[in-house]
Length: 338
Image (cartoon, rainbow, N blue to C red; front, side, top):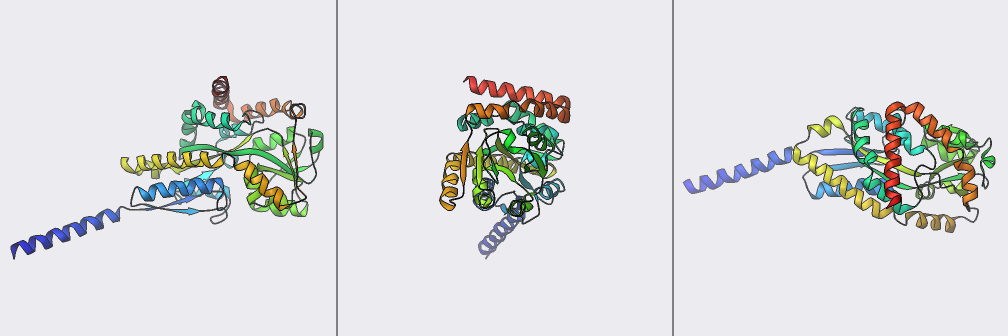
């Protein structure tokens, strides 16, 4: 009888312990800016898989449009409605002016291997940016590149003069507007949800995005002339609400860091060759698409206009922006010298 009671007590204790453990399991909400199967979605689901395989927590992923536009997602993360968000500096530029550095044309090389090495080793990326995001209540977990930027337009272009008076959609980012103003276009800031319709109706004459996004968003259907100008890469950032992150146990903080690292490695592998695959899909889907790859002389005509954008960046981002820019260039030089 005593033995039976002890076993029963032990069984109840084990059950209570299990319930107590389960009570600490949480559902974390994570939103990003892209569609199913796109780069940010690949990152989010790799993060989710790692967390759920290595803890009792679950991660609920929200794709583009499910919780509003990009600006809405940042606000929801800062307010603690979302625990995690994946968002381009193109949309955080108004909040974190220094993050607009990625929109200085011709600052980053176009060689994929060099770009990936830069993101791995850059002091600016891995040490300076986290401090800037922390000031806005955000824990920066990863910055990573998604693909080379490509301009799509209503007719082929090969020079800044060809962009004269063309209304080019840009993200709601002051420096990106400076870039297209320097290129001779009329920059037109619009949220993503209005871009396809704007191109279709002629409100817009063009836009810029990495190839995979041009393919998945169907932009080539309404803006069929693709131009590789070599002016930059699309970069994004994965962050957490800082109060949430700092409130986690050390074990869960390490879990989040490890999940971010695993998602980064998986995503970097995923994007290699992605542009070529996406371009093939576009060309198979449409006979109207043209692809123009500018030669060095043509690129130089655009590159000559970049210094005024760099000056505008320093003016917007101030002394810290200047320091970040200098470190950025030093990091790039270290990578290219190798």
